[in-house]
Length: 160
Image 1 (cartoon, rainbow, N blue to C red):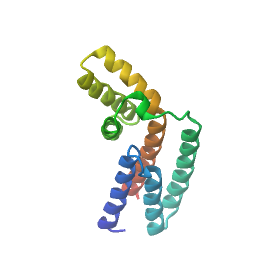
Image 2: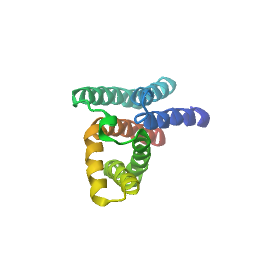
Image 3: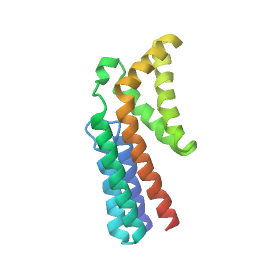
Image 4: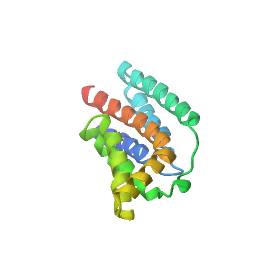
C-alpha cells in the first residue's frame, strides 16, 4: 500500500473520530469502513485480525449505546458546538495521555467552556454534570471505541 492510500484511510478514520460528536455523521461506521478498506487492500492475517477486532468492538459499543438511557442535549442546555469542541480535545487527549486523556479532555473541555460561558465555577460544575448525563455516556462510549480502533490501526500500520 502506498503512502497516498494510507493517508486517505487515515483521513477517513479521522473523519469518523470527529463524526462521533457531529449529529448525522456515522462516526463508528466511517472508522469501520476505513479498517475494511485497509484490510481488503493489504490481505494479511494482521489486517484481517484488526478488522475482526474492530467489528466486534464497534458492535459491542453500539449495543452499549443503545442500552444507555437516551437523553437529549437540548434538555441539558449544552450546545452542539461545546460537544464538538470537547470531542476534539478528547481526541488530542487520547494521544497525549493514552486512554484516560480522552475522558479528561472531554470533561475538562466542557467544564472550561461552561465556566467561560456562565462565569461561575459552581454553575460550570452543575452544567458539566448535566452535560455528562445528557451526552457523555453515549458519546464517550462511541469515541473511546473509535479511538481504540484508530489506535490499533495506526499501530498495525506502523508495525506492519
